[in-house]
Picture 1: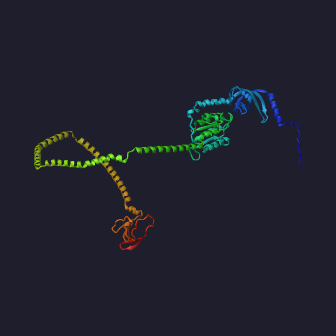
Picture 2: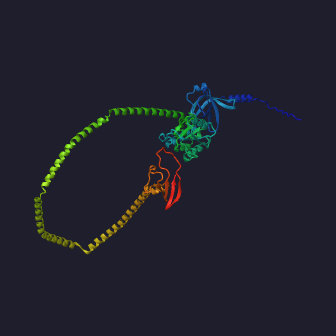
Picture 3: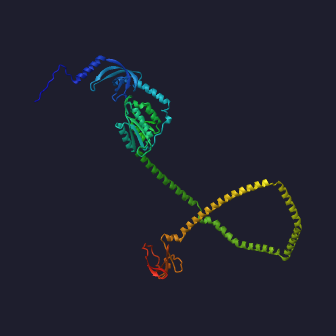
Length: 527
Protein backbone atom coordinates (compact mmCIF):
# COMPACT_ATOMS: atom_id res chain seq x y z
CA UNK A 1 0.00 0.00 0.00
CA UNK A 2 1.50 3.24 -1.08
CA UNK A 3 0.64 6.65 0.12
CA UNK A 4 0.88 9.69 -2.12
CA UNK A 5 2.32 12.61 -0.21
CA UNK A 6 1.34 15.98 -1.57
CA UNK A 7 3.01 19.17 -0.40
CA UNK A 8 1.31 22.51 -0.72
CA UNK A 9 3.10 25.89 -0.61
CA UNK A 10 2.14 29.50 -1.21
CA UNK A 11 5.53 30.22 -2.98
CA UNK A 12 5.01 31.06 -6.66
CA UNK A 13 6.61 28.79 -9.21
CA UNK A 14 8.84 30.23 -12.01
CA UNK A 15 10.39 28.65 -15.00
CA UNK A 16 14.08 29.02 -15.68
CA UNK A 17 13.36 31.38 -18.55
CA UNK A 18 11.17 33.54 -16.34
CA UNK A 19 13.87 33.77 -13.66
CA UNK A 20 16.54 34.58 -16.26
CA UNK A 21 14.34 37.20 -17.90
CA UNK A 22 13.50 38.79 -14.55
CA UNK A 23 17.18 38.96 -13.59
CA UNK A 24 18.04 40.44 -16.98
CA UNK A 25 15.42 43.20 -16.63
CA UNK A 26 16.44 43.90 -13.05
CA UNK A 27 20.13 44.28 -13.91
CA UNK A 28 19.48 46.41 -16.99
CA UNK A 29 16.91 48.65 -15.22
CA UNK A 30 19.00 49.08 -12.07
CA UNK A 31 22.38 49.92 -13.60
CA UNK A 32 21.68 51.06 -17.18
CA UNK A 33 24.81 52.74 -18.53
CA UNK A 34 27.91 52.38 -16.33
CA UNK A 35 31.62 53.21 -16.54
CA UNK A 36 33.89 50.38 -15.42
CA UNK A 37 37.63 50.63 -14.84
CA UNK A 38 39.57 47.38 -15.17
CA UNK A 39 42.38 45.45 -16.85
CA UNK A 40 41.79 43.60 -20.11
CA UNK A 41 42.29 39.86 -19.72
CA UNK A 42 41.91 37.00 -22.19
CA UNK A 43 41.88 39.24 -25.26
CA UNK A 44 42.60 37.32 -28.50
CA UNK A 45 41.57 39.95 -31.00
CA UNK A 46 38.26 40.21 -32.84
CA UNK A 47 36.38 37.00 -33.60
CA UNK A 48 35.75 35.94 -37.20
CA UNK A 49 32.32 37.54 -36.82
CA UNK A 50 33.92 40.88 -35.91
CA UNK A 51 32.85 40.79 -32.25
CA UNK A 52 35.38 40.77 -29.41
CA UNK A 53 35.04 38.76 -26.20
CA UNK A 54 37.28 39.23 -23.16
CA UNK A 55 37.15 40.09 -19.44
CA UNK A 56 37.70 43.14 -17.24
CA UNK A 57 39.33 42.46 -13.89
CA UNK A 58 41.01 43.99 -10.92
CA UNK A 59 42.76 42.42 -7.96
CA UNK A 60 39.49 41.09 -6.43
CA UNK A 61 36.86 40.49 -9.12
CA UNK A 62 36.28 39.77 -12.78
CA UNK A 63 33.46 40.57 -15.22
CA UNK A 64 32.87 39.29 -18.72
CA UNK A 65 32.81 41.87 -21.53
CA UNK A 66 31.73 41.90 -25.16
CA UNK A 67 32.19 44.51 -27.89
CA UNK A 68 29.91 44.17 -30.86
CA UNK A 69 31.28 44.58 -34.37
CA UNK A 70 29.78 48.03 -34.90
CA UNK A 71 31.28 49.38 -31.68
CA UNK A 72 34.61 47.64 -32.39
CA UNK A 73 34.94 49.48 -35.72
CA UNK A 74 34.49 52.84 -33.97
CA UNK A 75 37.29 52.21 -31.43
CA UNK A 76 40.07 54.83 -31.65
CA UNK A 77 42.74 52.41 -30.37
CA UNK A 78 43.49 48.70 -30.51
CA UNK A 79 42.83 46.87 -27.21
CA UNK A 80 45.74 44.80 -25.89
CA UNK A 81 46.14 42.10 -23.27
CA UNK A 82 46.90 43.58 -19.82
CA UNK A 83 45.89 47.15 -20.76
CA UNK A 84 43.90 49.05 -18.13
CA UNK A 85 40.89 50.75 -19.70
CA UNK A 86 37.72 52.67 -18.79
CA UNK A 87 34.75 51.04 -20.52
CA UNK A 88 31.30 52.59 -20.94
CA UNK A 89 28.33 50.33 -21.66
CA UNK A 90 25.29 48.50 -20.36
CA UNK A 91 25.21 45.69 -17.85
CA UNK A 92 23.17 42.73 -18.94
CA UNK A 93 22.93 38.98 -18.45
CA UNK A 94 23.36 36.04 -20.78
CA UNK A 95 20.60 33.57 -19.96
CA UNK A 96 22.28 30.77 -21.88
CA UNK A 97 25.06 30.44 -19.25
CA UNK A 98 23.67 32.38 -16.26
CA UNK A 99 26.41 35.01 -16.51
CA UNK A 100 26.32 38.72 -16.34
CA UNK A 101 28.44 40.84 -18.63
CA UNK A 102 28.98 44.35 -19.83
CA UNK A 103 28.25 45.28 -23.42
CA UNK A 104 30.87 47.92 -24.12
CA UNK A 105 29.95 50.80 -26.38
CA UNK A 106 32.95 53.05 -25.75
CA UNK A 107 36.39 52.36 -24.32
CA UNK A 108 39.42 54.50 -23.59
CA UNK A 109 42.82 53.51 -22.19
CA UNK A 110 43.53 54.22 -18.53
CA UNK A 111 47.15 53.06 -18.35
CA UNK A 112 48.91 49.68 -18.09
CA UNK A 113 47.60 47.13 -15.67
CA UNK A 114 49.40 45.94 -12.54
CA UNK A 115 50.51 42.64 -14.08
CA UNK A 116 51.79 44.32 -17.22
CA UNK A 117 53.65 46.89 -15.14
CA UNK A 118 55.25 44.10 -13.09
CA UNK A 119 56.07 42.22 -16.28
CA UNK A 120 57.74 45.25 -17.87
CA UNK A 121 59.73 45.93 -14.70
CA UNK A 122 60.94 42.29 -14.56
CA UNK A 123 61.77 42.42 -18.25
CA UNK A 124 63.94 45.52 -17.77
CA UNK A 125 65.70 43.99 -14.76
CA UNK A 126 66.55 40.66 -16.39
CA UNK A 127 67.45 42.33 -19.67
CA UNK A 128 69.95 44.55 -17.84
CA UNK A 129 71.63 41.37 -16.54
CA UNK A 130 72.13 40.15 -20.11
CA UNK A 131 69.76 37.16 -19.92
CA UNK A 132 68.08 38.21 -23.18
CA UNK A 133 71.32 38.97 -25.04
CA UNK A 134 71.14 37.64 -28.61
CA UNK A 135 74.90 36.92 -28.70
CA UNK A 136 74.44 34.23 -26.02
CA UNK A 137 71.85 32.29 -28.06
CA UNK A 138 72.83 28.75 -29.05
CA UNK A 139 72.27 27.18 -32.44
CA UNK A 140 69.86 24.26 -32.65
CA UNK A 141 71.41 20.91 -33.66
CA UNK A 142 70.55 20.03 -37.24
CA UNK A 143 69.75 16.38 -36.50
CA UNK A 144 69.20 15.74 -32.77
CA UNK A 145 69.11 12.21 -31.38
CA UNK A 146 66.91 12.88 -28.32
CA UNK A 147 64.44 15.71 -27.64
CA UNK A 148 63.41 16.69 -24.13
CA UNK A 149 59.91 18.16 -23.67
CA UNK A 150 58.83 20.11 -20.58
CA UNK A 151 55.02 20.25 -20.51
CA UNK A 152 51.92 18.68 -19.03
CA UNK A 153 51.73 14.93 -19.81
CA UNK A 154 47.93 14.94 -20.11
CA UNK A 155 47.33 17.89 -22.44
CA UNK A 156 46.99 18.02 -26.21
CA UNK A 157 50.35 19.81 -26.51
CA UNK A 158 52.50 16.73 -25.91
CA UNK A 159 50.37 14.68 -28.34
CA UNK A 160 50.76 17.36 -31.03
CA UNK A 161 54.54 17.49 -30.52
CA UNK A 162 55.00 13.70 -30.60
CA UNK A 163 52.70 13.37 -33.61
CA UNK A 164 54.60 16.06 -35.52
CA UNK A 165 58.02 14.60 -34.67
CA UNK A 166 56.84 11.12 -35.69
CA UNK A 167 55.63 12.44 -39.05
CA UNK A 168 58.84 14.37 -39.80
CA UNK A 169 61.69 12.35 -38.26
CA UNK A 170 60.92 9.61 -35.68
CA UNK A 171 63.32 9.74 -32.73
CA UNK A 172 63.38 9.44 -28.93
CA UNK A 173 61.37 11.96 -26.87
CA UNK A 174 61.85 12.38 -23.10
CA UNK A 175 58.95 14.10 -21.33
CA UNK A 176 59.44 15.83 -17.97
CA UNK A 177 55.89 16.21 -16.59
CA UNK A 178 55.12 19.59 -14.99
CA UNK A 179 52.11 21.71 -14.19
CA UNK A 180 51.88 24.53 -16.72
CA UNK A 181 49.45 26.67 -14.71
CA UNK A 182 49.25 27.68 -11.09
CA UNK A 183 51.53 28.93 -8.36
CA UNK A 184 54.00 26.00 -8.53
CA UNK A 185 54.29 25.88 -12.33
CA UNK A 186 57.31 28.25 -12.44
CA UNK A 187 59.40 26.22 -10.01
CA UNK A 188 58.44 22.93 -11.69
CA UNK A 189 59.44 24.20 -15.15
CA UNK A 190 62.75 25.56 -13.79
CA UNK A 191 63.49 22.25 -12.02
CA UNK A 192 62.72 20.35 -15.24
CA UNK A 193 65.15 22.47 -17.30
CA UNK A 194 67.86 22.13 -14.65
CA UNK A 195 67.16 18.40 -14.36
CA UNK A 196 67.61 17.82 -18.08
CA UNK A 197 70.90 19.74 -17.97
CA UNK A 198 72.17 17.64 -15.05
CA UNK A 199 71.43 14.28 -16.70
CA UNK A 200 74.50 12.19 -17.47
CA UNK A 201 74.82 10.41 -20.79
CA UNK A 202 73.63 6.98 -19.67
CA UNK A 203 71.82 4.24 -21.53
CA UNK A 204 68.64 4.64 -19.43
CA UNK A 205 68.22 8.43 -19.34
CA UNK A 206 70.54 10.08 -21.88
CA UNK A 207 70.85 13.84 -22.00
CA UNK A 208 68.67 15.47 -24.71
CA UNK A 209 70.20 17.42 -27.55
CA UNK A 210 67.45 20.08 -27.53
CA UNK A 211 64.67 21.09 -25.09
CA UNK A 212 61.12 22.21 -25.89
CA UNK A 213 59.18 24.11 -23.19
CA UNK A 214 55.57 24.07 -24.38
CA UNK A 215 52.09 25.07 -23.27
CA UNK A 216 48.80 25.88 -24.98
CA UNK A 217 47.24 29.32 -25.15
CA UNK A 218 45.66 31.20 -22.26
CA UNK A 219 45.28 34.54 -20.56
CA UNK A 220 48.08 36.52 -19.01
CA UNK A 221 47.28 34.99 -15.63
CA UNK A 222 47.34 31.48 -17.08
CA UNK A 223 50.79 32.06 -18.62
CA UNK A 224 52.20 33.94 -15.63
CA UNK A 225 54.26 30.97 -14.43
CA UNK A 226 56.45 31.30 -17.53
CA UNK A 227 57.23 34.91 -16.56
CA UNK A 228 58.72 33.72 -13.26
CA UNK A 229 62.28 34.89 -12.68
CA UNK A 230 63.51 31.40 -11.71
CA UNK A 231 62.25 30.01 -15.05
CA UNK A 232 63.98 32.74 -17.04
CA UNK A 233 67.29 32.19 -15.25
CA UNK A 234 67.11 28.41 -15.70
CA UNK A 235 66.46 28.72 -19.44
CA UNK A 236 69.20 31.34 -19.90
CA UNK A 237 71.74 29.16 -18.01
CA UNK A 238 70.88 25.96 -19.92
CA UNK A 239 73.77 24.56 -21.95
CA UNK A 240 71.20 22.56 -23.97
CA UNK A 241 69.47 24.68 -26.67
CA UNK A 242 65.91 25.59 -25.60
CA UNK A 243 62.88 26.20 -27.86
CA UNK A 244 60.06 28.18 -26.24
CA UNK A 245 56.54 27.30 -27.44
CA UNK A 246 54.29 28.92 -24.82
CA UNK A 247 50.84 30.11 -25.86
CA UNK A 248 49.69 31.20 -29.27
CA UNK A 249 51.60 33.33 -31.74
CA UNK A 250 50.17 36.55 -30.28
CA UNK A 251 51.14 35.61 -26.70
CA UNK A 252 54.57 36.39 -25.31
CA UNK A 253 56.32 35.65 -22.02
CA UNK A 254 59.76 36.29 -20.60
CA UNK A 255 60.81 32.70 -21.34
CA UNK A 256 60.42 33.55 -25.05
CA UNK A 257 63.11 36.22 -24.68
CA UNK A 258 65.49 33.96 -22.70
CA UNK A 259 65.10 30.88 -24.93
CA UNK A 260 67.46 30.28 -27.84
CA UNK A 261 64.52 30.05 -30.31
CA UNK A 262 60.86 31.05 -29.97
CA UNK A 263 58.24 28.98 -31.78
CA UNK A 264 54.76 30.35 -32.51
CA UNK A 265 53.07 27.08 -31.47
CA UNK A 266 54.10 23.71 -29.96
CA UNK A 267 53.69 22.13 -33.39
CA UNK A 268 55.99 24.78 -34.82
CA UNK A 269 58.54 23.94 -32.12
CA UNK A 270 58.51 20.28 -33.22
CA UNK A 271 59.07 21.39 -36.81
CA UNK A 272 62.03 23.55 -35.75
CA UNK A 273 63.58 20.75 -33.70
CA UNK A 274 63.77 18.04 -36.37
CA UNK A 275 64.15 18.06 -40.16
CA UNK A 276 61.96 16.12 -42.58
CA UNK A 277 63.43 12.64 -43.01
CA UNK A 278 61.90 12.17 -46.46
CA UNK A 279 63.50 15.42 -47.66
CA UNK A 280 66.87 14.32 -46.28
CA UNK A 281 66.61 10.93 -47.99
CA UNK A 282 65.66 12.60 -51.27
CA UNK A 283 68.50 15.10 -50.92
CA UNK A 284 70.98 12.30 -50.21
CA UNK A 285 69.72 10.41 -53.24
CA UNK A 286 70.18 13.54 -55.37
CA UNK A 287 73.69 14.06 -54.03
CA UNK A 288 74.51 10.38 -54.66
CA UNK A 289 73.30 10.65 -58.25
CA UNK A 290 75.29 13.84 -58.76
CA UNK A 291 78.37 12.19 -57.25
CA UNK A 292 78.05 9.16 -59.51
CA UNK A 293 77.55 11.35 -62.58
CA UNK A 294 80.46 13.59 -61.61
CA UNK A 295 82.77 10.64 -61.06
CA UNK A 296 81.80 9.20 -64.46
CA UNK A 297 82.50 12.51 -66.20
CA UNK A 298 85.79 12.88 -64.31
CA UNK A 299 86.93 9.38 -65.25
CA UNK A 300 85.99 10.00 -68.89
CA UNK A 301 88.03 13.21 -68.94
CA UNK A 302 91.00 11.50 -67.32
CA UNK A 303 90.73 8.59 -69.76
CA UNK A 304 90.68 10.95 -72.73
CA UNK A 305 93.65 12.88 -71.34
CA UNK A 306 95.55 9.62 -70.91
CA UNK A 307 94.88 8.63 -74.51
CA UNK A 308 96.05 12.05 -75.69
CA UNK A 309 99.25 11.77 -73.68
CA UNK A 310 99.83 8.23 -74.98
CA UNK A 311 99.57 9.48 -78.56
CA UNK A 312 102.07 12.25 -77.77
CA UNK A 313 104.68 9.81 -76.35
CA UNK A 314 107.39 8.53 -78.77
CA UNK A 315 107.61 4.86 -79.72
CA UNK A 316 110.22 2.42 -78.39
CA UNK A 317 112.24 2.58 -81.64
CA UNK A 318 112.36 6.37 -81.42
CA UNK A 319 113.50 6.26 -77.79
CA UNK A 320 116.22 3.66 -78.46
CA UNK A 321 117.47 5.05 -81.78
CA UNK A 322 120.08 7.42 -80.32
CA UNK A 323 121.46 4.96 -77.69
CA UNK A 324 121.60 2.20 -80.35
CA UNK A 325 123.59 4.45 -82.72
CA UNK A 326 125.93 5.50 -79.94
CA UNK A 327 126.49 1.84 -79.06
CA UNK A 328 127.32 0.94 -82.67
CA UNK A 329 129.79 3.80 -83.01
CA UNK A 330 131.46 2.88 -79.72
CA UNK A 331 131.75 -0.78 -80.77
CA UNK A 332 133.37 0.29 -84.04
CA UNK A 333 135.96 2.43 -82.23
CA UNK A 334 136.71 -0.18 -79.59
CA UNK A 335 139.05 -2.32 -81.75
CA UNK A 336 141.19 0.63 -82.84
CA UNK A 337 141.31 1.98 -79.30
CA UNK A 338 142.55 -1.36 -77.95
CA UNK A 339 145.39 -1.50 -80.52
CA UNK A 340 146.43 2.09 -79.81
CA UNK A 341 146.41 1.52 -76.05
CA UNK A 342 148.50 -1.66 -76.43
CA UNK A 343 151.13 0.15 -78.48
CA UNK A 344 151.25 2.98 -75.94
CA UNK A 345 151.74 0.61 -73.01
CA UNK A 346 154.46 -1.31 -74.95
CA UNK A 347 156.35 1.97 -75.51
CA UNK A 348 156.15 2.89 -71.83
CA UNK A 349 157.40 -0.58 -70.87
CA UNK A 350 160.37 -0.35 -73.25
CA UNK A 351 161.32 3.05 -71.82
CA UNK A 352 161.22 1.73 -68.25
CA UNK A 353 163.27 -1.35 -69.28
CA UNK A 354 166.05 0.84 -70.71
CA UNK A 355 166.42 2.60 -67.32
CA UNK A 356 167.00 -0.73 -65.51
CA UNK A 357 170.48 -1.48 -66.93
CA UNK A 358 173.21 -3.02 -64.54
CA UNK A 359 175.51 -0.03 -64.95
CA UNK A 360 172.74 2.38 -63.91
CA UNK A 361 171.83 0.28 -60.88
CA UNK A 362 175.52 0.06 -59.78
CA UNK A 363 175.83 3.85 -60.00
CA UNK A 364 172.74 4.31 -57.81
CA UNK A 365 174.14 1.88 -55.19
CA UNK A 366 177.41 3.90 -55.04
CA UNK A 367 175.46 7.14 -54.45
CA UNK A 368 173.42 5.57 -51.62
CA UNK A 369 176.65 4.24 -49.98
CA UNK A 370 178.17 7.76 -50.01
CA UNK A 371 174.99 9.16 -48.41
CA UNK A 372 175.11 6.48 -45.70
CA UNK A 373 178.81 7.24 -44.99
CA UNK A 374 178.06 10.94 -44.57
CA UNK A 375 175.19 10.21 -42.24
CA UNK A 376 177.32 7.78 -40.21
CA UNK A 377 179.98 10.46 -39.74
CA UNK A 378 177.33 12.96 -38.55
CA UNK A 379 175.57 10.50 -36.22
CA UNK A 380 177.88 10.70 -33.09
CA UNK A 381 177.84 14.49 -33.03
CA UNK A 382 174.05 14.54 -33.53
CA UNK A 383 173.51 12.07 -30.68
CA UNK A 384 175.68 14.16 -28.36
CA UNK A 385 173.69 17.28 -29.17
CA UNK A 386 170.38 15.44 -28.67
CA UNK A 387 171.53 14.03 -25.30
CA UNK A 388 172.65 17.49 -24.18
CA UNK A 389 169.31 19.05 -25.17
CA UNK A 390 167.29 16.31 -23.42
CA UNK A 391 169.40 16.64 -20.27
CA UNK A 392 168.79 20.41 -20.17
CA UNK A 393 165.06 19.84 -20.73
CA UNK A 394 164.84 17.31 -17.89
CA UNK A 395 166.78 19.62 -15.57
CA UNK A 396 164.35 22.45 -16.29
CA UNK A 397 161.37 20.15 -15.68
CA UNK A 398 162.87 18.75 -12.44
CA UNK A 399 163.06 22.22 -10.93
CA UNK A 400 159.28 22.66 -11.26
CA UNK A 401 158.44 19.15 -10.02
CA UNK A 402 157.65 18.51 -6.31
CA UNK A 403 156.50 15.56 -4.19
CA UNK A 404 153.13 17.18 -3.35
CA UNK A 405 152.36 17.96 -6.97
CA UNK A 406 153.36 14.46 -8.01
CA UNK A 407 151.16 13.00 -5.26
CA UNK A 408 148.18 15.08 -6.41
CA UNK A 409 148.71 14.01 -9.99
CA UNK A 410 149.04 10.40 -8.91
CA UNK A 411 145.81 10.60 -6.84
CA UNK A 412 143.96 12.20 -9.73
CA UNK A 413 145.22 9.53 -12.06
CA UNK A 414 144.20 6.83 -9.58
CA UNK A 415 140.65 8.23 -9.35
CA UNK A 416 140.44 8.46 -13.11
CA UNK A 417 141.62 4.84 -13.39
CA UNK A 418 139.00 3.73 -10.84
CA UNK A 419 136.28 5.53 -12.78
CA UNK A 420 137.46 3.96 -16.01
CA UNK A 421 137.52 0.57 -14.28
CA UNK A 422 133.89 0.95 -13.16
CA UNK A 423 132.84 2.06 -16.62
CA UNK A 424 134.77 -0.86 -18.08
CA UNK A 425 132.90 -3.32 -15.84
CA UNK A 426 129.54 -1.81 -16.83
CA UNK A 427 130.49 -1.79 -20.50
CA UNK A 428 131.66 -5.42 -20.37
CA UNK A 429 128.44 -6.43 -18.60
CA UNK A 430 126.37 -4.57 -21.19
CA UNK A 431 128.28 -6.21 -24.03
CA UNK A 432 127.87 -9.64 -22.43
CA UNK A 433 124.12 -9.11 -21.98
CA UNK A 434 123.79 -7.95 -25.58
CA UNK A 435 125.83 -10.94 -26.78
CA UNK A 436 123.65 -13.32 -24.72
CA UNK A 437 120.46 -11.84 -26.19
CA UNK A 438 121.89 -12.10 -29.71
CA UNK A 439 122.97 -15.70 -28.99
CA UNK A 440 119.47 -16.58 -27.70
CA UNK A 441 117.82 -14.99 -30.74
CA UNK A 442 120.17 -16.82 -33.12
CA UNK A 443 119.58 -20.05 -31.22
CA UNK A 444 115.81 -19.66 -31.53
CA UNK A 445 116.21 -18.83 -35.23
CA UNK A 446 118.48 -21.85 -35.69
CA UNK A 447 115.98 -24.13 -33.96
CA UNK A 448 113.18 -22.72 -36.07
CA UNK A 449 115.09 -23.42 -39.29
CA UNK A 450 116.42 -26.81 -38.16
CA UNK A 451 114.84 -29.98 -39.50
CA UNK A 452 114.56 -31.33 -35.95
CA UNK A 453 111.85 -28.79 -35.18
CA UNK A 454 109.97 -30.01 -38.26
CA UNK A 455 110.28 -33.60 -37.05
CA UNK A 456 108.84 -32.56 -33.66
CA UNK A 457 105.69 -31.40 -35.45
CA UNK A 458 105.02 -34.92 -36.76
CA UNK A 459 106.94 -35.01 -40.07
CA UNK A 460 109.55 -37.64 -41.12
CA UNK A 461 112.60 -37.71 -43.44
CA UNK A 462 113.07 -40.51 -46.00
CA UNK A 463 116.75 -41.55 -46.39
CA UNK A 464 118.39 -43.88 -48.91
CA UNK A 465 120.92 -46.53 -47.77
CA UNK A 466 123.75 -43.94 -47.99
CA UNK A 467 121.92 -41.58 -45.62
CA UNK A 468 121.02 -39.01 -48.30
CA UNK A 469 117.51 -37.50 -48.02
CA UNK A 470 115.13 -38.46 -50.82
CA UNK A 471 113.20 -35.35 -51.91
CA UNK A 472 110.89 -36.82 -54.61
CA UNK A 473 108.95 -40.05 -55.04
CA UNK A 474 110.48 -40.48 -58.49
CA UNK A 475 113.79 -41.35 -56.83
CA UNK A 476 112.35 -44.53 -55.20
CA UNK A 477 112.15 -47.87 -56.99
CA UNK A 478 110.40 -51.02 -55.91
CA UNK A 479 112.46 -53.04 -53.40
CA UNK A 480 114.64 -50.09 -52.24
CA UNK A 481 115.71 -50.12 -48.62
CA UNK A 482 114.60 -46.91 -46.96
CA UNK A 483 115.17 -45.32 -43.60
CA UNK A 484 112.34 -43.25 -42.05
CA UNK A 485 113.75 -40.79 -39.55
CA UNK A 486 111.36 -39.55 -36.88
CA UNK A 487 111.96 -37.24 -33.96
CA UNK A 488 112.61 -40.10 -31.54
CA UNK A 489 114.49 -42.53 -33.82
CA UNK A 490 114.78 -44.27 -37.18
CA UNK A 491 112.70 -47.07 -38.73
CA UNK A 492 113.79 -49.30 -41.61
CA UNK A 493 111.28 -49.69 -44.45
CA UNK A 494 111.06 -51.51 -47.77
CA UNK A 495 109.48 -49.83 -50.82
CA UNK A 496 106.82 -52.11 -52.26
CA UNK A 497 106.14 -50.17 -55.47
CA UNK A 498 108.10 -47.61 -57.46
CA UNK A 499 106.91 -44.08 -58.11
CA UNK A 500 104.35 -43.61 -60.86
CA UNK A 501 104.24 -40.73 -63.28
CA UNK A 502 102.98 -37.45 -61.86
CA UNK A 503 99.21 -37.29 -61.95
CA UNK A 504 96.55 -34.87 -60.86
CA UNK A 505 96.74 -34.14 -57.12
CA UNK A 506 94.41 -36.42 -55.18
CA UNK A 507 93.79 -36.64 -51.46
CA UNK A 508 94.41 -40.20 -50.19
CA UNK A 509 94.75 -41.79 -46.84
CA UNK A 510 98.35 -41.93 -45.59
CA UNK A 511 100.19 -45.21 -46.25
CA UNK A 512 100.41 -47.52 -43.30
CA UNK A 513 103.70 -48.89 -42.03
CA UNK A 514 103.87 -52.50 -40.96
CA UNK A 515 106.78 -53.23 -38.71
CA UNK A 516 108.67 -56.50 -39.00
CA UNK A 517 111.65 -57.40 -36.87
CA UNK A 518 115.00 -57.37 -38.68
CA UNK A 519 118.42 -58.01 -37.34
CA UNK A 520 120.06 -54.96 -35.90
CA UNK A 521 117.03 -52.72 -35.73
CA UNK A 522 113.39 -52.24 -36.81
CA UNK A 523 112.27 -52.80 -40.37
CA UNK A 524 108.88 -52.16 -41.94
CA UNK A 525 107.18 -52.68 -45.24
CA UNK A 526 105.78 -49.56 -46.90
CA UNK A 527 102.58 -50.22 -48.86
